[in-house]
Length: 257
Image 1: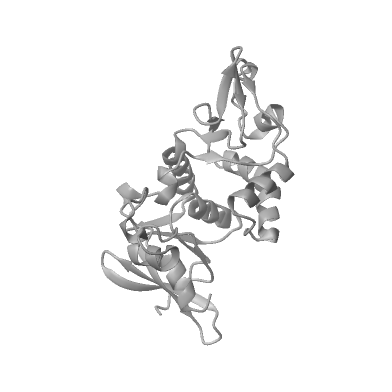
Image 2: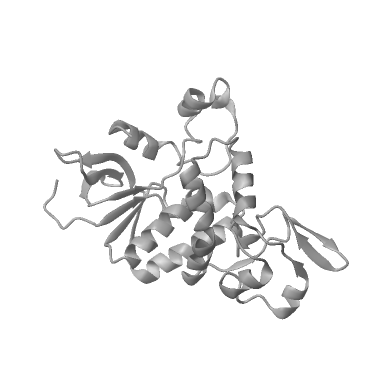
């Protein structure tokens, strides 16, 4: 490995999860590098293709307007009926969707930190609006929201990614495009000490103290779809980025995850 100062954190990926991890690490004083396998014009991972909608616990419209949608006008608020979204409803919905296979401890962490996460996103430049087009209906001139996913980033998934990239750029976080992580490097004591990447100029070993793998799943890898989902899944049409080919999962499996 080259004798240069290592990064404190290397984040593999440049979607919502990856950029949030990079920004938060920077806030903690870390020197951060973001690796994005895609070229810049295809940035954002699958986050780019989503609606940018969020589910989180809250106590209704007044609560949400405090620090998630503070710029919602009085006229807009008068036209909305937003029910409370409590932690038990979140839990029941999560378990229904996952057929009770979600990890109990991680589920409650997700639920109980969801409200603070939304405020954190707003503090870091993400603007939110009501999701009128998906989970609301009009009665007597008012929009009634249901289901729980009622708030979206302005501009949807593409807008969410743009907000976070702008924040990362303002903070001076380094992002390398067309540079994908291919291998986790370990010391003799198994500790992660770097990442092997493949970029425009070939392969490179980049030293670091820790790695965040936020580089998506394997939906764009036909072989992995068949292996893990079953026969015929290699033939399905896939929505989203062509760059989610299971690299992060395979790197982790290769060192014993």
